[in-house]
Amino acid sequence: MCKGVSESLGVVILVMEAGSFVRSIPLLKHHHLPPSHRPFRHYVRVSANLQERGSYKGGIKTRELISEWVSNNDDSVRSLPIYVGGISLLGVLFNRTLSGIAPVADASSSQSRADLLTIGLAVTNILAGLVWLSIRPKSISVVPPRGVECQRIHSNIPERVASELTWAWESLSTTTCCRSLVVVYDGICVLQIGYASSNEGGEPTVVDSSKLMQGSIYQGVVKSGSQSYLANLSLYPGKSELPFLPSNTQAVILQPLGDKGIAILGGDTIRGFTTSDQAWITLIGEKLDATLSKHMTSLPLAR
Image (cartoon, rainbow, N blue to C red; front, side):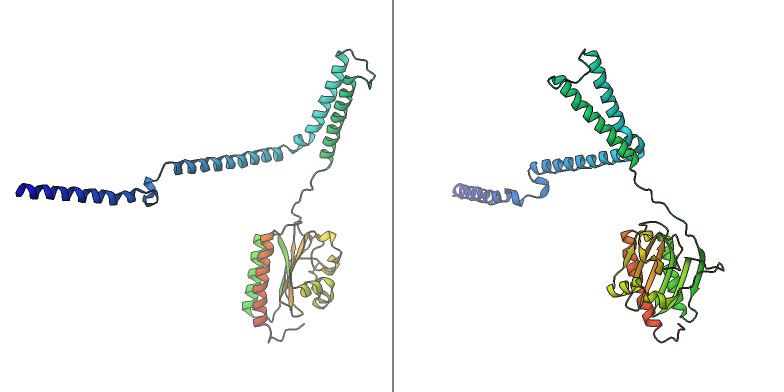
């Protein structure tokens, strides 16, 4: 009796173990495994991608090295076609002299036709080198303003507005090529700071607000409501409307202050204001407009 019971219990235990083993089989499927037990091929793909990225960075580094070498040896690179063309031309003449071919070109001779083609290519290289040497990019340098320094802040504006105008000038003159700043708001010149042109007495030229507002520059900026960037002021005919700026001002930014004013920034470098500078100046203009419109509407400022 006991033996039969023990045998029955053994069969039940075996069946239970077999059932638990069968139930544990689905857990071995791939999508239930943790990341550390997934097949090795995934790691192979990752290493391949890393290798490709490394080679791409290596290509960029190589191009940067070549570009740096060319910029450091500008004269040699520009004259290189002349040397190549001259050596090729001498090589053709030397080969024709030693080969025993008649010095007169013969159209029926394949050697003569090849020599003529080589000479043409050599002369083209020489001419290309001469063009490279004659045409060079114009170097852009900082031009010190030709004028006198001034700092004029309207006497009737609040202290808070004056401090904000001073902050704007210090920020712009420190981080950009701005060397002159004029702010005209509601027909009044509230700020003239930095370098300015001088009159006959050697004093800074006063900004004529009414004359400035009647000019095409002011009208165009206020009408458009967007910033105007004169990257090379010497090429712009309307520079005569800005007589208060130094005569050798290189670049000018005209920033509208809402629909009541304008900020004029003069720079000492052609194309010296970068894209980020222009965006930042736009934000400063919006801040100045908010401050001026809030604190100056009720003030009896003399025009």
